[in-house]
Image (tube, rainbow, N blue to C red; front, side, top):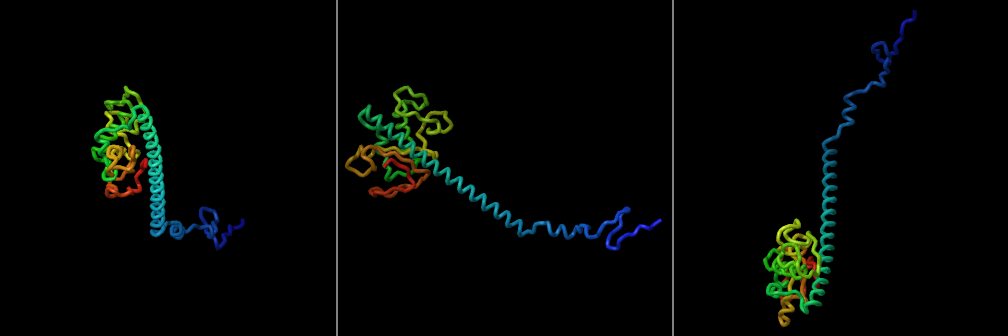
Length: 215
């Protein structure tokens, strides 16, 4: 009977010969596969940078979309005002709209904004009470997201711009043709685009550039 010969370069285990070149050394494997602290910091930093880029791009897209919608709505409201004038001989106006000066009042949170906007809503929608159910002649159909309060219910308080504020509406220049109280000799219609700062002083020909307006 021949004796089993075991190569000196291998290890014998349970009757089998295992070449030492196939032995996995646990300590060296762990060292090569683990992430270092610096590598983890770099990965997290890249994730934060990419997240910031995505959020900033999404915010820019939302603002751009809101401005485009405001421009469209201002054009539609202006057309409705022209139709109103064709029937009534004048643009919608009352004591509030005749005294709201866009040159000096740039805060959409003031009561003058909401009162003037609500008056315009009543004249163009045919809804004299603000209950969202027109009974008179309508010159424009208002979607629920165009009205305040938001949500499609409750008594209307103003026409809302895409930034959640009241649109500005003024007939001050038409009511005071000899003074500098507005921009158009007919009516001024604008959105402050979310700004709450006042425009430049009265008498200038410029206004805050971010405003969206019909002049």
